[in-house]
Length: 88
Image (tube, rainbow, N blue to C red; front, side):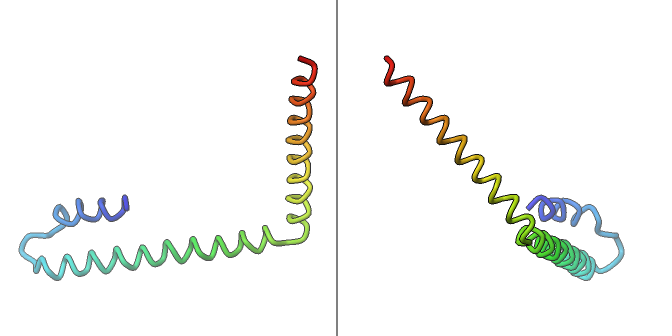
């Protein structure tokens, strides 16, 4: 969204007087489209690499252990709160 707004601002400031403005807008729009495609392709490829890394057995094992520790911590927290309420 930000890049589209920036393109709109630069679009009018970047027109060279004496040349066909329609052709200039077409070239700037094409360049913007090409850069957007390259940017999002890069993001997709990086996310694919990150996904493969996250799905590896080693990382999955670490995530499972961390999740287990968090759940144990929540359980201990809840049980300590119930014990405090029982004594009141």
